[in-house]
Figure 1 (cartoon, rainbow, N blue to C red):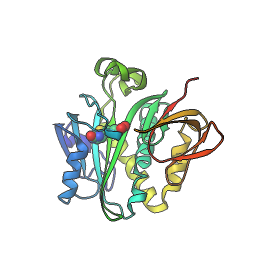
Figure 2: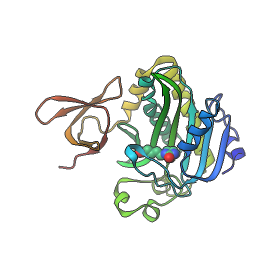
Figure 3: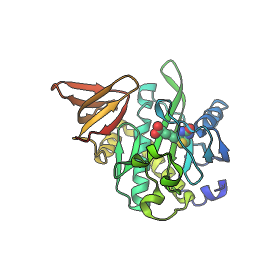
Length: 261
Ligand code: BTN
């Protein structure tokens, strides 16, 4: 990977016009936040070949061996902080579309920010923002895609049943620069739609791939575990569950797993 390779033939207007590349950083999200704080323009992307302290949601580690695609893009949205929390859906939709189109994978989206193939996670998204009161100064959308490695060889045993990679699904290695450009194009398209028409069309498209809807799920956050039927994701991005006692519950933070009974 190199900046020239990543940008070769890139057809976006705003996203990826400035790319910074490093062979190894602690976290591209931390790098992009520093760049944004120094005034980097919207669409600037920080890409790394590996991360030594890649971060996931809920304080988890994001294992980032060579062969994956790890990048963070800076956006400077006009909308407020509540709207900006929906950026994970924008990015999830974009990655899902890119992976479907480029590699014909049967992709699913899972609330709130996962992209799966056959129930196994292939991509994670971490959006972070800097705000003053409710105004967003900048947001950073970090994307990690398991691409050119065999997860059976590089991930710990506990993650093997729940993760996959493009190499594991396609049976061969792909060109990371192609993947980068495909995701940039879809991301710019989805982000522009979000800016112009709001969350509704993003959510509608995202839900088309949301295989967990209509299923019995377990939702865990760091404090509790909730079991219920996944009914919907509402216009604020919250998950609506029907609990076993028949009541409806709205969940804003957590992780979903399908319930095996
Ligand atoms: C998750 O699924 O919990 C989110 C994972 C997000 C990982 C990406 S990799 C690029 C960027 N840099 C990070 O440290 N995290 C995100």
